[in-house]
Amino acid sequence: MSTTYSIAIAESDVNFPCTDTESVLAGMRRSGRDDIPVGCQGGGCGACRIRVLEGTYTKRRMSRAHVSEAQEAEGVALACRISPTSSLRISITSI
Image (cartoon, rainbow, N blue to C red; front, side, top):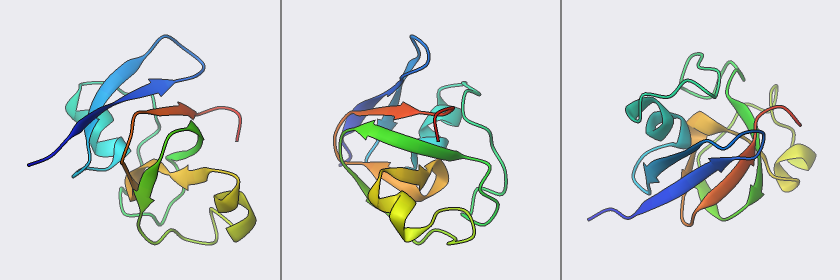
């Protein structure tokens, strides 16, 4: 059984639901939104790079060409490679 969390985009009043069994990018697309750029959806292109400002998440391997270890420590992630474990507030433009 999955849990649904709210993903809020800091630059707008946009919120969309996302379960803990899907990526943030997949949750956005399932909601019919297009706020986060979509690329390969596998972590290799970097198009969906975001910064998590608040909340917790699990992550899968991300290309170091697009997210360095230092950036990852500051909350930068690829939306296709993270799944929420709480509600999140994210930034798309202030990477």
